[in-house]
Length: 343
Length: 167
Image 1 (tube, rainbow over the protein chains, first blue to last red):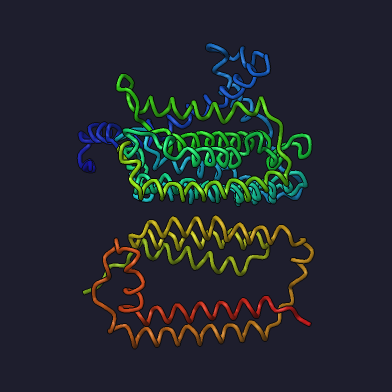
Image 2: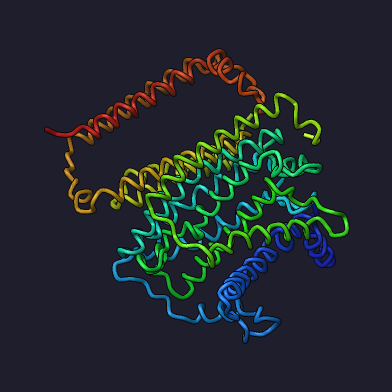
C-alpha cells in the first residue's frame, strides 16, 4: 500500500510510487491496457497480411513500417473520422452502448489470465469460471445489438450467432472440465503450474481438439462464420455498424480472438512455461499468437458450413466427444497412469 | 452500539431492486430483459460480498448467460405486434397483486422476526465444503429455507397465472 500524500513535497514521490507499484503496472502496462491495445492492433494487421499471403496477394504495404505494420493506426484514424450512420428507427442508446460493452467484456477476462508467474492482475481462485461467465455474456449482447439495429440482415445474423454460440459453449465448458480435473483447480495460475512437466495437450488431446473447434465457433471464424456470412447477410449482425461503432466492434472481436488464444495457451499449451532463455511473458505471447495464427488460417482455406450441419456437429458430435474425454480423464487419473508425467 | 451502514450492501440492494422493478415496468420487452440481466448481476454482487465468488460466477453464467438468452430468444421469436397488443391493464388485478405481495411481505417479516433470535450467532465459515451445504442449511437455518421456499412457490404460482391462456 502507498500512503496518501499530506504535503506538496510528497506528491511527486507519491506519483512515482503509484506508477511503479505492481498493481498499476499489471493493470495499465503489461497484461493490462497498453499491452492489450498493441496486441489487438497487431492482430488486425497480422490477419490481413497472413490472408493476403495465403491468397498470393501482398496485403497492407504503404502505411509505414516494415510490411505496412502501421496500417491499424491508419485504419483507426479513417474509421474515427467517418460518419456514424444510425439506421432509421434504430434503438440509439443500445446501438451505441452495446459495442462499448462488448469491448469491456472482451477485456475483462484478461484480469485473470496469467502471462507469467507474477504477471497476473487478479489471481482469482475461480478464474476459469470467471472467464467463462464473462464470455457467456457475449451472445446476448450481440443479439441485443442486432435487434437494436432494426434491420433484417443484422437480426438474422444475431439469431444465428446466438444459436451457434450457445450450442458450442456446452462442449467448450465440458472439454475444459478434464483440464480442471487434471490440475485439480479452477485457478488459472495453478492450472499453468500443474503443466510444468507435461502440457495438458498430451493427456487431454481430445479435449484440446473439441475446445479448439468450439473456440472457432465462438469466435465466428471460418468455417463457422455463418453469423456474418457475406453472400447472404451482407456482414451479419454488424451490417449496420459504421465509422467508430464499427471500429469498436472490430476491436472487441479481435480482443476476443486474443482472449480465446490466451485461454487455449493457459489450458492446454502450458501457459508461460518454456526454455529459460526467453522470459515467461514472451513465451506466453508467442504461444498465444501461434494459436491465433492457426485460428486465422482457415479463413483463407476453407468454405463455410451449412447451418444444419453446424448445429448437428455441435450437439451430436462435439458434445459426445467432450463427455467421452471426461470419462477417459477420470479413468486415467484413477488408475494413476499419469503419475509418470508429474500429474 | 450502532452498526455503520454497509455501503456495498446498500448500493447492491438499490441496483438489484431498481433493475427488478424496471424489468417489470419496461414498455419495451427487450429493455425488460436487459434490466433483468442487471438485476441478476446485482445478485452476483451479493454473492461476491458474501465471500462466495464461485456462486457469483455461476449466477452470471447460468442466469445472465443462459436464462436471459432464453428470454431474449422468446422475445425475438414472438412477433412485435403480438407482444405490443397485450396491454389489457385491468386495475382490479394489479390491486389484488399489490395486496397479495403486501400480505406475503408481512408474513415473511413476521416469521423472520419470530425466528430471528434462534439463528446461530456466527455465520458458517465462508469456505464451506459443498457436502456440508445441505446439513448446514437444513440444520441451522430451517426458517430462512422455508421462507425461500415460500417465495419460490409464490413466484411459481404467479408465473402460472401470468401464463394462463384465456379461453
